[in-house]
Length: 59
Image (cartoon, rainbow, N blue to C red; front, side, top):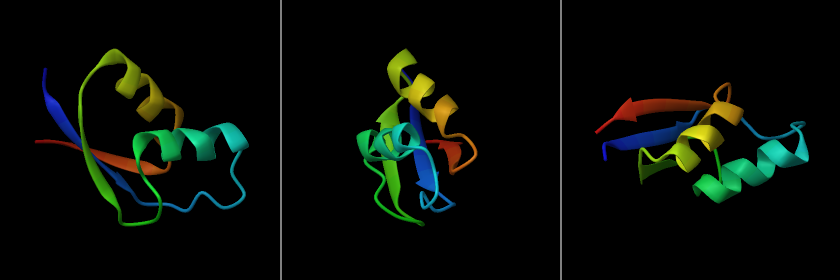
């Protein structure tokens, strides 16, 4: 599987609770934080839900 780097670029303040929980599940806890994940269907689905808050790059 390919690896992807997910970076939070916008705040989770005033977002839906489900979007906040999705960011926490991805391991993102603030603007500028980065985390590397495998590109599994589960992770890609979570990223799709919060794509307006994050930036994705391939590693």
